[in-house]
Amino acid sequence: MKSIKKTYAAIQIIFAQIIAFIFSLVLQRKDIWIFSEKKTEARDNGYHFFKYIRENHPEISAYYMITKDSAERHKVEQLGRVVNYDSFLHCILFFSAKERVCSQIHGVRPFEEYSGLTKLYFYRRKDQRQINLKHGISKDFRPDAFDFRKVGFDLYVSGAKAEYDYIKKMFAYPDKNIVLSGFCRFDALQHAAAPEKMVLIMPTFRSWLRTSDSSKERASEAEAEKFREAQYYQVYRELLNDPNLRSILRENGYRAVFYLHYTFQPYTCLFDDAVEKDESIVIAHRKDYDVQDLLMRSSVLITDYSSVFFDYAYMHKPIIYYQFDKEEYREKHYQEGFFVYERDGFGPVLSQGAEVVAYLKTVLRDGCQMQEEYLKRAEAFFQPYDDHNCERVYQAILRLDQ
Image 1 (tube, rainbow, N blue to C red):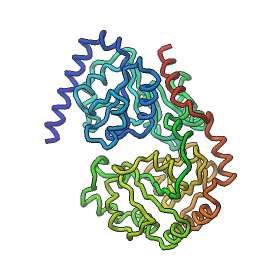
Image 2: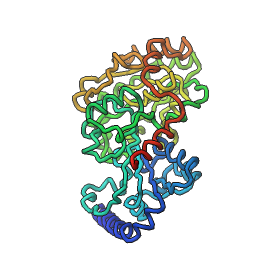
Image 3: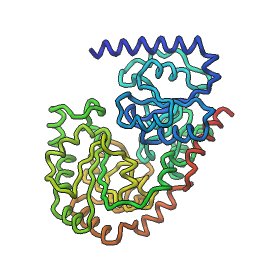
Image 4: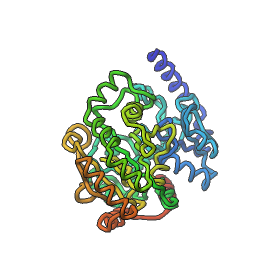
């Protein structure tokens, strides 16, 4: 079945290039820009930049690629020009677009889950650009993802000055191929409403525990069994069932929302069964919650290495780093880059669940204010700091042609 689908995808790719070539002059005059994130999502920098373009530059033929059954499709349908991901039209627009804009490494490529199909690409516009809006601050050392000569990006969008300096120097980016703009989604953070009494627990994934397909709703039984045996699962199950945590939440009128990284979402159901029922603890499924909405609505963030903490620091809200497996994480996942948590972090780095709960108690007692030491780090880290990030990205794209 998979081989049949791959063959069908290959046929669409080939014919789409033929059509794009035949009608190249007509399509070039339309100034086509295509946008995407993960194929099922509209919640990150891709969505926010698409929204900006649709509302401020109607002269651009902008299209957003998203799956037909996505729970977030309605958000982009309100803006217009929505295209089904992996459709024949998606293929045509991919080869015809002047700007391919994406927050993910796959860069809005159709049928990206099938390896080898890029060998079939024979047509590309001479003025075509690949724009890397990014998903998070590039704090770790990942030459496979950040070297634009290898990855093929024409513009790398940087979210902060320290990141910009590190990436530009490390990979010798020419000035026109990297921009210090801030992330497009940061514009919305500038207008966030007052937070609710919510503690957000949002750890990142571990590469050695990921499932075969992150988009599926549930992990296979074999994957689930492996995950249950992992320290990661044991640690967070214990934290969520910690009676001291629950007591602190109830006493202060708070609730904790536990949201796994997109890659680990197929494991969410395992926590549904393992966490004792309590109104103060919520196990969040991605179909029901939006990451940025949770970041904006919550008052405290508990994470490990997830780059979402940068968004939190941008809003000057308290952060707790729970890093119980630092050596294994650095050995098997990502190596340390320019960002050293103990030196540069925006909150304490803790390794024990009891320490996390104790510090959380202090944070809630003090009204969920970021401590002065961490506030100064955040203010120094985010430059520029305003709601013009989308505009700076737009101007940087225009400069590529100049």
